[in-house]
Image 1: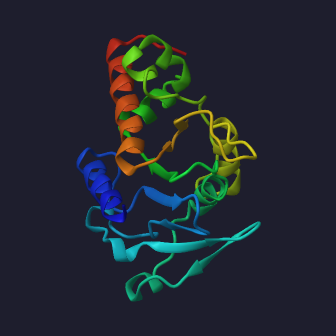
Image 2: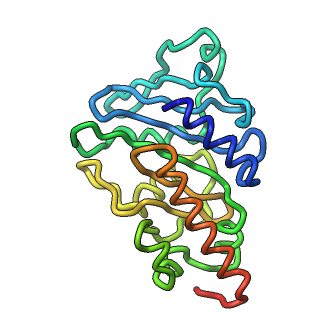
Image 3: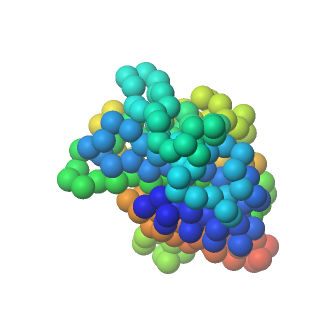
Length: 208
């Protein structure tokens, strides 16, 4: 699925949801003691599968594993605390995969900047709430920090067994984080929420 992740990032770049070196994605199969994450500082519209970082899951931290000669010189995304927490804890379902996608979609960020809690607008739009569970916003927190990771985990209702209560969470002034079993399914949560945020902002009605 690393190739598919690259495809989603190209699409995100074309939609102006990220600039060249923004965004990050990780993926893990539940029965493996490692996950893959996008590298830091690499142009996402030209990202290749052999540039991903392979990360071993330890009890309270992580370590980089050898993957390819190209990836050896790269660093994992700075948002690795966010991904580590979500990828370490996974419900033990057969063939479960967890994909975590963090992007910066324009209208989602604009809606949060306008004071709208993204979880409240989903109630008015069945094409959103039928398929996507939207968590309450994470407020202003420092990017690439443990605090950001902890607050995202809490708002997504990540529990001790690895289950999550929501599909997507917004981070005020920063972006969104979506989770699902394939890259495109996670991406569709963002696409769906972005579409609704655009409608709400165009209406001029504040749905705080």
